[in-house]
Length: 312
Ligand SMILES: NC(=O)C1=CN([C@@H]2O[C@H](COP(=O)(O)OP(=O)(O)OC[C@H]3O[C@@H](n4cnc5c(N)ncnc54)[C@H](O)[C@@H]3O)[C@@H](O)[C@H]2O)C=CC1
Ligand SMILES: O=C(O)C(=O)Cc1ccc(O)cc1
Image (cartoon, rainbow, N blue to C red):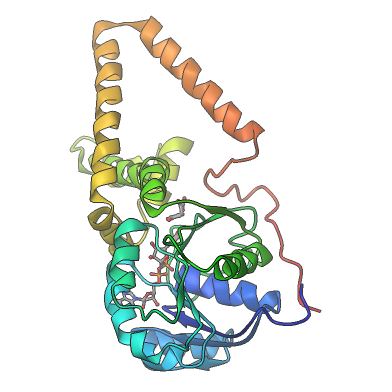
């Protein structure tokens, strides 16, 4: 908890899982003087008002950013370019403009095109989330012990980058800086491909004629259940992710298909040694990840969830 707010006014464009979690966490930590929020639909705006997490709810993106010293776009990546065009003329000189998109290179290009030279553009991606969406789904502890990746364009003011990094650290995240292209390649394999696999396997199981829909869930062991959770993620958000990180996803999908073919061949040939060696290697990888404390696996609700300190 800090005494003086880091930012006088925070504007949130879009108020779903991520926007709602940022608002709750920033408020719990006393990081901002005032939070102004907007959302595309009147129903969401009404709900945000009812929730009482923000100071003001306004009708348009342009109105929301007026006099804000931190603006964060919390909307699907495919909508970020158009939203930036809408707010560009209303931004306060010196403001930090950021986003939370799961894809960076295409989004950074689409936003940068519209931004005036007198604001600081510091794109961000909190690598934290759930399969839920909408204004009720957010929670203040979402970002604790999770990474937030910043991808500032070359020449971005270092103080602005540090200020946004300090904001993310204050709501519990660990911050790392990298290029948008590197971000997209890493996330293609660690997040986008796993979601694509989940979307595929759940429909594959559902379409099997001899297996009923109820059996799919009834007899699903832990692994399949995790896939169904991930495959329940927001369709708009994930459509936009795949459309905007096409090259990196296709590259990783190619690698994946090669590995899958190797395992398919081993099963067909009864080649137990290849299967055993492969599974031994992946077990060691998983254990290495857990050892260095980077276990970002599906939330274990049996484990105690981390808590943010409450504002006094
Ligand atoms: N859901 C997750 O686990 C994570 C999502 N992200 C990123 O955060 C962003 C927001 O995702 P969530 O909060 O999960 O989504 P959400 O669906 O919970 O909320 C999205 C918000 O954007 C608004 N919106 C939707 N389409 C819009 C459009 N065309 N123009 C303006 N506003 C629009 C909605 O009304 C809603 O207020 C996405 O870019 C996503 O890639 C990043 C990390 C994790
Ligand atoms: O729910 C899960 O397991 C996730 O993987 C959440 C998630 C989705 C998208 C991101 O860009 C980051 C995290």
